[in-house]
Length: 334
Image 1 (cartoon, rainbow, N blue to C red):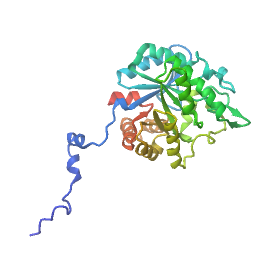
Image 2 (image 1 turned 120 degrees about the horizontal axis):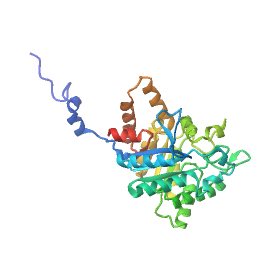
Image 3 (image 1 turned 30 degrees about the vertical axis):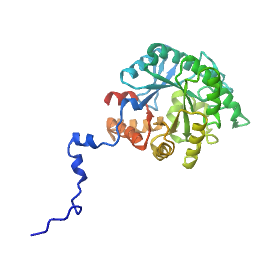
Image 4 (image 1 turned 135 degrees about the horizontal axis):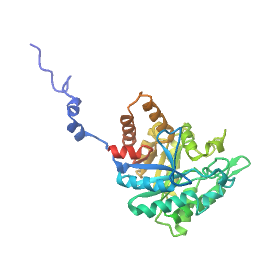
């Protein structure tokens, strides 16, 4: 007769015991995805009662302001805490100096006022601060002699932040990656008596190939043409530099920081969250959404399963929250 193996020898420890039942798996689950973890990006356009399909982002549409208000109300019902508004600016309004960005009656400001009038403080509104939706060249800043200049751009970003705050924006989100812009924007907001407005900094934003569909959505792809943003967005090869960028933005007054893109940069999310302990967000960008959606349309992946798994991965990496085009669908499932 064979001897009984001592405890610790195979198979003394059986991790599968905790996986046997659904209730048991829930008891030992380390991370949880909730609707309150999600932020829903919305694309807005001029007009009324109109939805425009974005071909490179199946299922995502540009909405006129009245429909964006309806979407905001849906977000409240789904317990999503905030939306982020991005404009598809009329091409006739795009100029080299991106002056429409500081127009108090621009598309974003009118949309913010309409949304806040409808939902008040039941929903946070985030506004992107960068010049690419308004510039004729598609760059995030002002261009001088073929180069995106830093300090002159920051001056315009401060003015853009103030008009958005005046419209009722709750969170200013600088996505431009200019040096020193967080500190200047914080001072500008405080000086204009908007010290209550938060700053969510795109602190580690990489010069990624995953942004293509977003540029289609806001209409900047054609303006950018063959250009790129590598002189100000981060090199995808770098990780330590991301920590420097985050450290600088926090020291300048950022309330929250963001890593962008998402899934290819989970290591950055982890390092930022562990190093600083600050609220750390991640953007599941348009290219990530497009890949998962296209694969699901082909029947190669199960849409709901990969959607929720990808979002949970961000939480597992340490993210406090996630900007995702799946937000409404995921929140309803959760």
